[in-house]
Image (cartoon, rainbow, N blue to C red; front, side, top):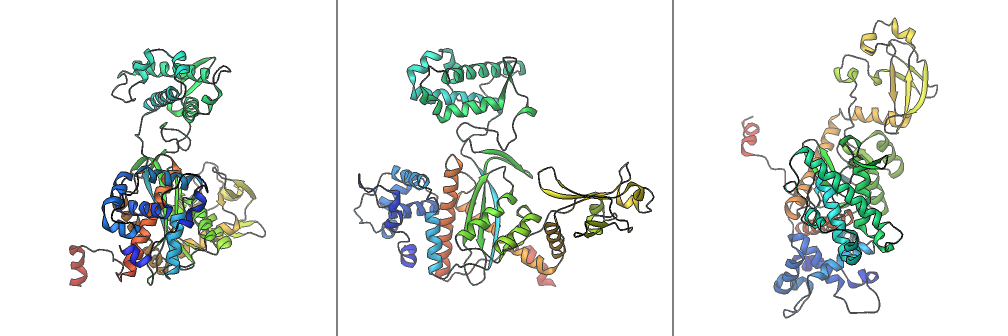
Length: 521
């Protein structure tokens, strides 16, 4: 009821006119469906529960401007509405409409400060071992073909396949011994290859090759089996694709396995960016959904590009180490005029970690003359552009062996059997930005600014506890991203209502025991 009193209807049917054909069967009001979708994510309801609430709850009828006798709509309409959003690439429309509403109320504008963080998201599929995944992929393909071409499939399979691939694959059903399990895998590989050969034969119906389950079967077999002299064999664990490409489940081919410190999961990551100003509510301005294996610093540029496109770039963007590197420090300022604030990764070479040796910042570098002077006053012998192991541009600077061999400070510089010091630097702009940021990290001003980044973790906690953001409702990254956008939209509406109602921002709670010592002092 507050939504209608404070923000009116939020959506209008004309906002979604391009999603529906001009002619045909009359559709349910898209503005009403958008509001129901918003309420659904605010309260964590399923489609059936949301449809029932639209029929039975007076507060919902008040917002939706429905007569008390209105019987509502069938719950499948909500799924159809979400499908329309994805089909027309309009998944951000509800999210953007609420942000426009915030702008009209003076609660959001460009500039100021924003902060980002990410968290893991579990996919809506079972985590399976390789053997389970291969067996279930073949089972999924068989079930799909049984629906699409039952007579064709009957002609290319035998009844004993039903015993092997009829029930769902699970470790409980698989043979227990290593030899028996390997025999099971070999048999499954041969059966799957036979099915693929039949599907891709010239006599097979061409539409079978276009089935998503068949293409998934082909990819999974390439990833897990190999042909050696015409014989199919099981790939060992060190001979399969990395987790960035490996398909773990046929039901969600976008989900990936990843680990972060002590957390291991199969699914995705969600990246939230929000404002944080004293005179305005904290509102989520950007949502990015990636596979679980994508590093955070690969998303920073996407966040800035998205904010720039919508006129919401901040002056300062605060994030943790995962979102910051030397290249991004330069690009954020040069391309978007955004000051990226966050701790950079420390120098892990022994000279810097132990603090008793000469690290790279102890060398005086003249970029114009391409010359570096070591702490003992000796110039470099060579200066060569190169690429590091991940393809980033670097400069490798080497010093003469004759100088290093007789140097009194050699033990502080290198422990190599070949007495020659080499330092690797980023290109000039990145190197200088990195050094400047490391100097800034030691200041009290940086510590005070960065401390406020922790507030975005509260936003993630709200999304997890109120909207179950860490568990995907749907299968596939596009649908999962839509879920995250709807979750962020619901959270923004709640925050706007609380702010307009005069509710102040919550402060970080401090336990009773922790309060004792400041009071005693």
